[in-house]
Image 1: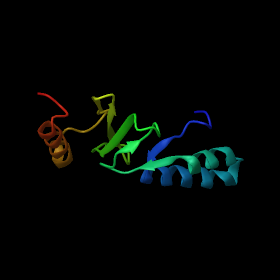
Image 2: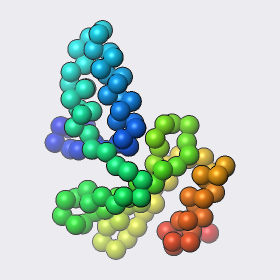
Image 3: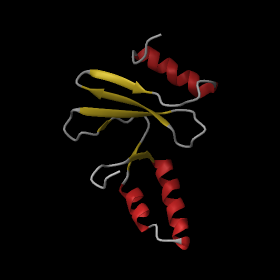
Image 4: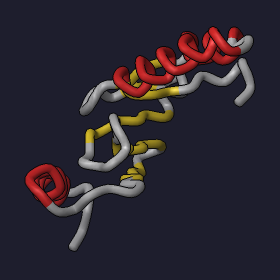
Length: 111
C-alpha cells in the first residue's frame, strides 16, 4: 500500500501487528513496517467513519465472530447506496445470530 493511502485496522489487530514487527527488530530492520503500522488508523465497531474526508463515502465496521482476531464486516455508504461487505465470518453461535438479526431488522439485508 502506498504511504499516501491510509490503512485501517481494528485497534486489537494494530496492536498485534505492532508487537510482531517490534519483536522482529531483534532479527532485522523492520523500521519501515513498524512506521507503516503506526500510521494505520483504527476503527471501532458501529462507529461510522468518513473515509473520503469530504462527506461522500462512509464506512461503519461491525465486529463479527471469526477465527481471525479482531475481524469486522463493513457497511459502505455512498451516494445514497449501501453495501454490506460481510467478508468471511462465522454464522453460528451467539454473535453470528445476533449480528445478522440486527441487520435484517435495520433493513441492511434482505432474506
